[in-house]
Image (cartoon, rainbow, N blue to C red; front, side, top):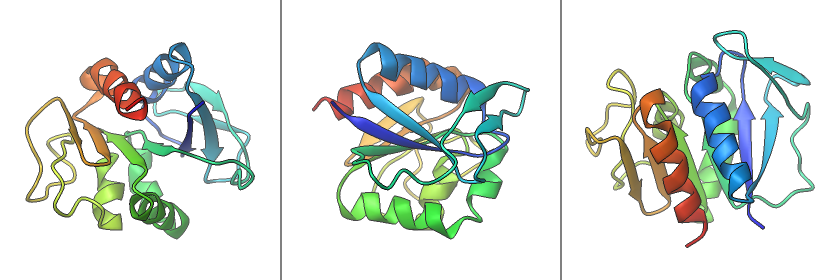
Length: 162
């Protein structure tokens, strides 16, 4: 069974996170929500709450990492541990998924070089950014915004099952 690491920060976009988690669950893909802040419950940008692991779950093997969007992304960019993890997943050719503002983390980690991707129009503006709803290229799966969440999550499931 596949396992996905989901770093969650206060201010995440709940549609992007919860809908994606629901689709992963329905497809029998495990996920672990990890609070980079060390909290056991993390609040979204619109007052939704999720239960999280307070410490990095080092005992688990992960096949992918998923970075949801929302105002939290600006804070995620400040965690060297997140940037290092994204680089490590890329070096191991594991799937790196992100949506909306989430690709900002991938851009900072330098893993979008030579890869096509999408993001919210206001974020992650690089030379390979496409104006599409969902893009899967090499080990990167990206979605444009909250409206793309169902298509994004289904593409992530498809890529994980390949």
